[in-house]
Image (cartoon, rainbow, N blue to C red):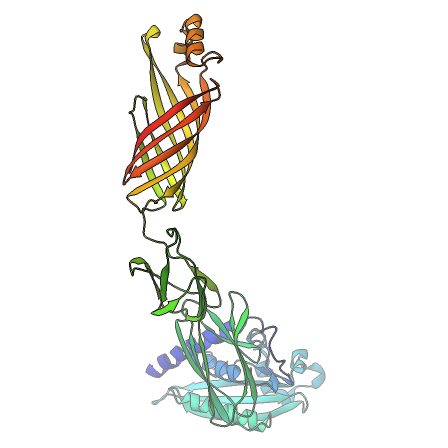
Length: 482
């Protein structure tokens, strides 16, 4: 049973590799591969119909995977071989088959390898494998032979002997072996491995290693393809001699471009280091290992740390790493405080697309006493500001700048406004806003402002134009940046 488990384990690996081979052949190969005689390889038959097909898979996959990449023969995909499995008993009795009544599928091939096996339940356990090869040119079986082997690892020695006998006796090719050794550092990528346009395996492990025997004296074209974009990342054509080993090595690599420091101060100079090597702005680093993290450090010309971080690259792609200088950050909440004789307070959000330029959106609330009504009028003022620091920035304690502002007033309540004596409205309009019309329930304005800030405190003064009153009015506010 231990032998059966061992073979079943090996079979699973072989079956997976061959399962991927059912995919389409590699197109756009660098060199065309000349195909010759069509060689069918049928799964061998278990003549006792046992529930286990371990030996069938081991023998079939080993023979099939070896012969399908020999450049001088054409081995169809394995789904056809499985569909033609029923031909095996026909070919075994070919000497009693009349040519005119033979299955037409037989004559689609130049050669057909078939066979069966019989497990002998003895101690130690043995298996007898019978192999035959039918030839279209001779219209008969040109090869028949039995092999007896143990059911442990020794079975692979018998498979090697089967291959040697078939290749030398039927195909008349010298059976000398070379070896291909694959070492692919795939990381998170997946690669397809093609030999002579045949998909043989998928390298989808971070560290992929595989060794396989090939026929010496034959020319093999090895391609490693990245399915993500269909690109051939490795291509080599090699003719191996007897007992020659050939190493196929591929490491996933990518490139990175170091961008200038984002939110940099005016006139500031930086020193960049990538993986301990000096770098420069907009410099591209190529052939970087895609399997591990890379580090970048940026200091200013006074050796103050500006940025430190890590990044990864993607195989075959160019990435960007953009250091950001440590500062107050691109987003701030601003609380407007009532004061300076103005009954306004509110909340706003500032966003800095650049460390000197900000966009502000918020809303303030105002209130006004109306003695004639013994009441207070209120308004809500959504506003939008655009500002620029001419001195300092959010990383500095003191900063100063200027900007433009736009506001829209919505007054409450209209019923209170309607109760005001029209003569009084005309009076206050003519005195406060000469030439203006009556008080409305809404209004809008635009203006300019200057701002001076110390740490989290802000003082803003300016003037705006009221389009409803057709008059300028002063603006003053104290704010706290949270």
